[in-house]
Image 1 (tube, rainbow, N blue to C red):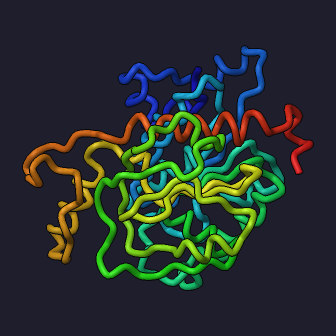
Image 2: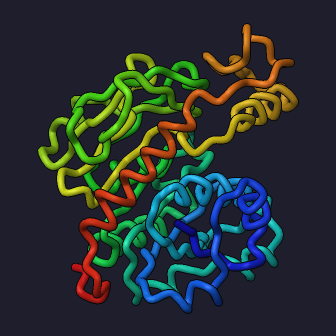
Length: 305
């Protein structure tokens, strides 16, 4: 089924060329169906790439989805044309009186920054607090997952001696949870972060479950038992070349960076890596939309509490 997005959004052309069904506003308005309203708070510097990655995965559901984009009004984005933000993004101030079926919050390159020192931290926490009564389910990615767990439960992050960087094996810890339905016993996920959270801190909160994890990368999928909050510590949405671009960027800057693990064939950065996580990523997003959003959200979204 289609994902409903603005006609001129740059991601639209990419997705259409991949035979992904996207639907413009005029066609969607003629269908007698209520699409799921999903808002994406995009905190990543390269917003257009992130839009495409997320829309590609959200489109794999049989549900019709109406997507809108939100940016942090208290942050000046330096890596995107201001006209792009003006044309395709809105601010929290303009949507805070609306209700949504789902909220997706992306990661951000802030792993080494204390939460309270993030200059849009107050806006981030206001959006998180708002989501508890105005969104059926919130999906936190990478930095947002750590930040959300800190704000919602006081769970701290700890710095890593070396950055978790590469593609790692994961296993399912709770096989029959809706979010892990259909997962392979072993699946791959990219990670790129400087911090981690401790399992003992999560286990102090009975409403949280660790559904999947990695011996090396740590806890990966954490969710509340009612599905209203889903925390993903990795980057399942990444494309094949995303880690490559990050690695080459840091090498060019002269930064101390290790080669991403389990990524380049024969550990040769001159060779193009192969995707080993795409099927899992598609299932992860589909499960969230189906089991945490669609099957739980009221048809009359104004009744959401």
